[in-house]
Length: 231
Image (cartoon, rainbow, N blue to C red):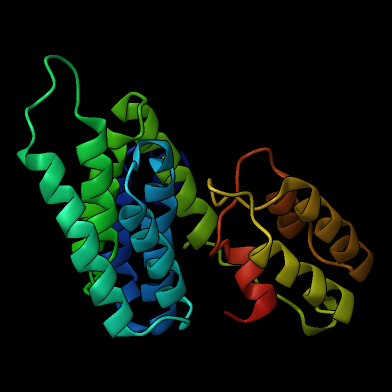
């Protein structure tokens, strides 16, 4: 996959294979964390189809686990609870027509809590696509957008100068990370624009400002926010 293909890709599987094979993302904790947040972002798109609180809790625990705020034991317990929900939906009669969105959403949430990150990556996003309620190809495009937001451009990684990271900028970046739109998990646009204004005053490059100001949604793990916070 070349730079042009990365920027225009509509197949998240190709992007994930590229990240695994060319950039060895799971060799460092930061890569594993970002992949976990990608999985969680995908699964949050099925939130309205998650009728059992245990499924939702699995996503929330997985997010906290990614940021070192939940233990492996908590993740395992959340996975066990979410598996019971997925098994219940699997065993009920299949719908007369269409996709059983509740089952796919519950299955994605269960897979989201796998400790092994690639088990989560290969399972949860696929199930999330089927459980989100939209056409699968549209969900694939959204997942590609999430990957670009979280990993940036592997061919042109951004650099963050220390003098851009003023106290105000860091404080704003932290609030952006913590105060999301829920349950979607998307970062609040007005806070991103405010952060961009302060970064512009600090002298940040146009690429960084453009990413924060673009119209597409941003999620936890956004590579610009992570650069600011040192995640």
